[in-house]
View 1 (cartoon, rainbow, N blue to C red):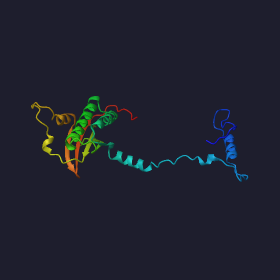
View 2 (cartoon, rainbow, N blue to C red):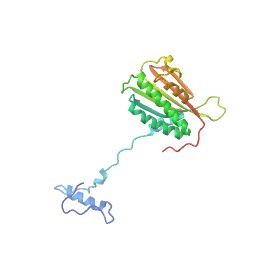
View 3 (tube, helix red, strand yellow):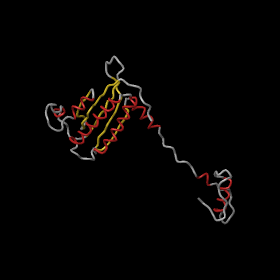
View 4 (cartoon, one colour):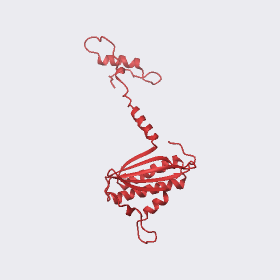
Length: 216
């Protein structure tokens, strides 16, 4: 702000900025040796920043919703980030109208699946990419109005042996190995396939929507 000793304040009686006071003060401060040919108003140079063009973003979001995509997450294989995924899924399942037990089951299943990816596919490395896609689907040939939440988990670790995705027998008394049973009990569909050099785990939960909560 330009000012000089003894200059009057640049605000009016109501406390707001007064341009009629501001412009003459600027003219006196910036006045050169010869008389000014035209009045100066620095207010003309204060232009608001250009608004970002969101037209392309809007089209992209519309296409995503048309395809059923609700949420996409990209994260590194760091277990510290699992809490962020849990929080996002808890809110998403609530908005879709899943019951409280269903919300917990879906969140627990995805948390377990991501933990397995970090532990077994990436061998504990913390900087490897994982993608999570959440989409709305409908049950095929369904008489009712069952909707489904499809969750795709994608990583770029080594290919997984499908035989190892069966989980151990429940009567075997030893630590670990029950994660797959928990996932299958929580979800209606659990599938794995190797596509384009990536592992893809598909989890689906069908539900009859309760009164969904508004999106904040």
